[in-house]
Amino acid sequence: MDQPREPAFNAPWPALAMAAVIIVGFGLQTFLPPEQILPTYGFSPQAMAQGRWITLFSALFLHGSWAHALLNGVAALAFGAPVARYYGVRPAGALAFLLFYLACGALANLGYGWVHAGDPHLLVGASGAVAGLMAAAARMLAGKGVPGPFLSPQVVGMTAAWVVVNLLIAVVGFAPGAGDMPVAWEAHLFGYAVGLVLVTPFGWLSRRGVVD
Image (cartoon, rainbow, N blue to C red):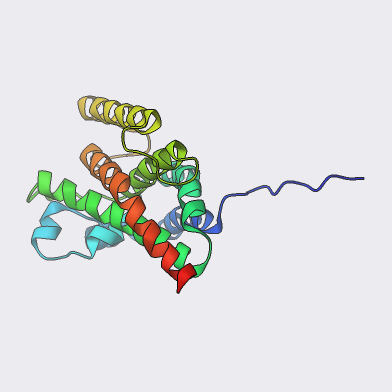
């Protein structure tokens, strides 16, 4: 008797959808004039100072190159899968996943804007949000599917590795797929820190839809 086949993709659909949004979104972006789309929707500390707060979010859906978009899409799928599995695939869980992703990305950009106040250089990409998913995934690993302790070996090890990688990026000034855009290593660290903390409260939000 034939054994049932394993599905090609067994990641929860919210993680698959987010990866698709990143990659397909950049495909659509390539049809738009960059001299218009990037200054309008890309984030910069200067834009934040001018009150254009929407760019904290809109910049998450723009990328500098195919390599940039593909790296973030693959990372969003890999690290987003355990987080989406924890939140669940019902509407409340999917909403919690989306809001968690947006919160990590926006606060990562906000942290970058605070460090580089007034800087006019544009920042685009989902890296800050993906860093938040990475941190949350580390806690999922530590807790075997639920948020584990902050000081668990898995969380401490992942955190140390992420800090070292980004300090190296800061020294070298280069990261794969970044193109001519500045490498926002500070945003990576802010997004990661936010993800470590916020994964639990957004879990409470996801479970309200199950209880109510």
